[in-house]
Image 1: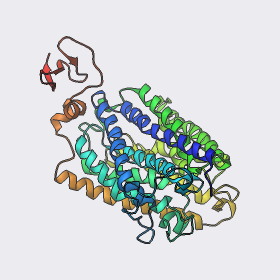
Image 2 (image 1 turned 90 degrees about the horizontal axis):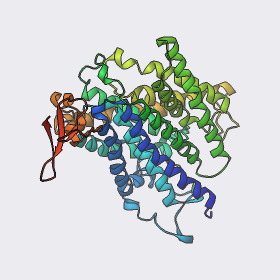
Image 3 (image 1 turned 180 degrees about the horizontal axis):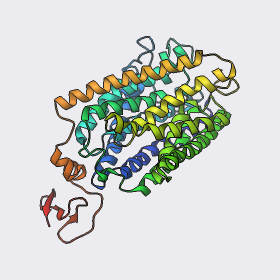
Image 4 (image 1 turned 45 degrees about the horizontal axis):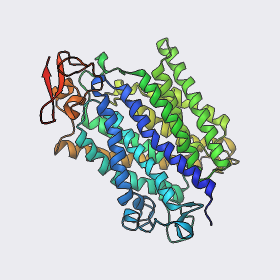
Length: 450
């Protein structure tokens, strides 16, 4: 098959859109934290971007899309190590369908990056940056790269590659990452929240409220913008399938915003900007696996369900006592499960996915397959992430000290503060009145009394 230049251009643009989602996530998460932790929160996203980008080129792509070496469980880590065998130009360029394989490498790389970055929202204000980076790298290798193989690797060339056991083996539908991205990240986030424990004053201290809601809204807007590349780009072509996914990616979050705001209005008496931003993300999460399988009308229904369910789910952390700081579990894990299972109910046989859900006379078969895929990823990610976080906590340590938490993770981990008021003698440290951050003669930073 020759190269389709239109498809290639669309996938390149989509990859850039998905890459933008990680800085968008940094804004979204950063605005939801306290003023003295915003830089650390944003750094965890940028740190994941840097680390996973390197790991993807070294072994990640090969583990996810190399020739299967274990019954659909893993690609050969060494087959395409450093992208050997993938590079090439002109007529000799290796192809992935109608696009050059190197373009596909880049598109999948940004999926890996955003998945790891999503996890960080569960541990705001209390994690060592170095320990987070250690966790991020190991989790990507042990969990994301294999799960990407399970879900996204399909044998379309007739060679000996058997493809992933969830996507190709079982026939689970996950168009753009409800299992591999959102359930995967949400389960790992729950594990980290359990291992690191609660922030000081969790559930009682009003200082844990979002410090900058305009940043949250900006981040949500950037995420939604990038998500069109995430979902419509997964068609791997500039075609009607991309258009189908694009429309569903528009309408589901619209409905989810309405659902979330309705819950807030009935429960709390007012609709909030944080609710609107969170509702949009919840709808985007839910439609991600289903955007090629259900009609726009069913996407509205799914969005409403996700908006209501996730709005209710984020409050479970107070009832059950786990401190998922920025609601990764309530939005990404719950939303991912809802979207993945909804395919088994509302999949339209006339859609690009071609599956038949229960509402169209398809019985419970597809729903059962969707459940196997969703909960297999959930359990695997939860267990591995919990063990990994526990080992890091017991060795190098994962959580900062209580004193550092009170001072602020930005200052103690990065020697910086987000908001500077240019007072004499240095930069005022918001949250620590009477303290300044100054530069010493050797170029280091030091906190001193005013």
